[in-house]
Structures are given as structure tokens and as C-alpha cells.
Length: 140
Image (cartoon, rainbow, N blue to C red; front, side, top):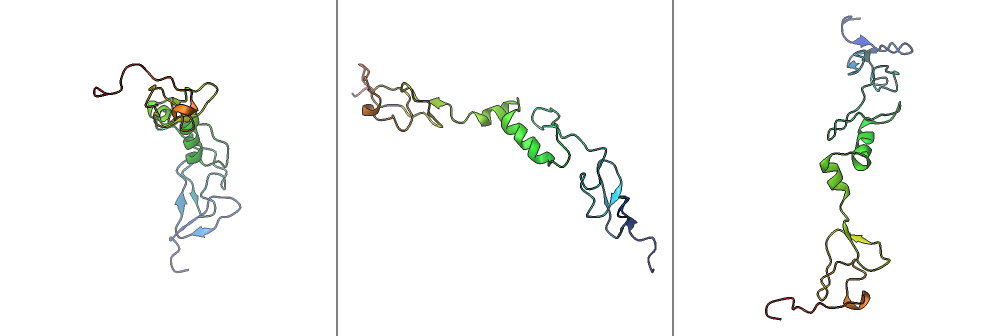
């Protein structure tokens, strides 16, 4: 062998492959080949617990789960930070028609009674409109 000091052996007991481009695990600091570098493939005992970047809460993950996906799910569902809560509250404009539970992203107000409705009930005939007595504009 011409270069006996080149490369390192995989730390996985079942492998011990001489790898010329070895990879170091960021959790346990062991050397692994490309096949055993993931936490699940080398049964890493020092798997780091991911932390939410918005609320600094540790996110529990099971062995073999992708930390990025679990953190994303936490931000979408459970995160208590202001940006995450504002992101979830997109559809806040509830329809005022009795029995309708539809919500819209933007306010849809009736031109005559000036009450908020969903797109289905926005026309005066669809929500039993009772116009206000005062004019809408100064010229009206």
C-alpha cells in the first residue's frame, strides 16, 4: 500500500471500512463512512436534542426521525412565540351570517350594512341585509 496513513477506518464495529473521505459525527465525535454517518445507522448515544429557534423549547424526537421535520411541525402547531402564532392566524375574519362558520383571509364587508361576511354571503340578498340609515359617503 502506497499511502498507509491516508484515510481512517469506520468506527462502526460491523463495518471497519477504510474510508479515504471519512466523516465525523457531530454528536459523538466518532469517525464513520458514508453509510454509517447518520445517527440511526451508527446508533449514536449522544444524539443532540433539537431546540426551537423561535421559543427555545427542546423538541423531543424519536430515533430515526428527522429533527428538521419535527421542529417545523412544532412551529406550525405548538410554538408559543409571536411569529409562529401570527403565522397560524391567517383566516381571522369570521362570517357574520347566522350558522356560517366560514373564515376569510381579508375582510369582505357589505356595501350597505357594513358587516363582515364570507364570500358566499357577501351579497345583500344572501344575508338578509338591513342597510344603515346614514349615507356611506359625504356625497350620498
